[in-house]
Amino acid sequence: MSSNRYGVDITYFKKWIARAFRDMNDYKPDELARELARMSRTADSAVIMELEFIDTDAANNTLIQSVKLNKEKDATIAQQFQELEAKERRIAELEGAIVAHRDVIKAGAPDSTLDPADPVLWQQVASIYSNDEDEEEA
Image (tube, rainbow, N blue to C red; front, top):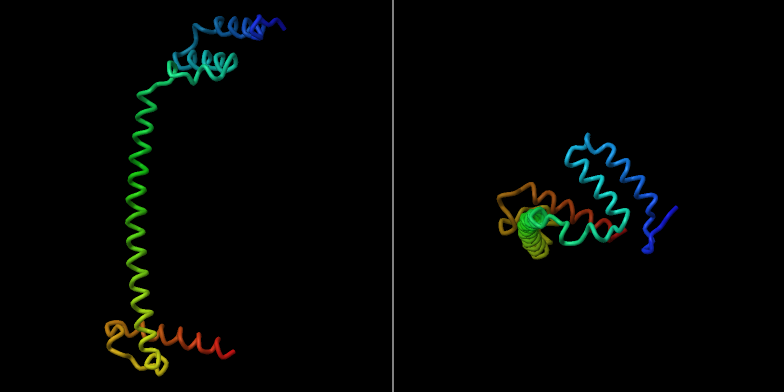
């Protein structure tokens, strides 16, 4: 092992460069770039991250795409949140009506002020309250 005054293993890199130069006639552009990037990363991995070596257009496009995707996701989440709030408001309305008409519900008689268009809902509500009463008594 032979290092220079900065600690770079010269023997290692001389062998690597000799091998790379030997095969260079068969390298495609991307293969040569990868080989040189590997050498760069091995010598000092921080250098390859310097602005000079970063494709800012590609980085900017990636960032823009990410922002657009996040904006779409945010819009979807906002819509889902609004739908959830609407459902919660409907549940609160039904719960308020149920509490206001608890005696009627216990008796199993539909009350037109709760939700006359949905007699199945009445059966479900009555069933829920019947179960709650049974659990409270137990």
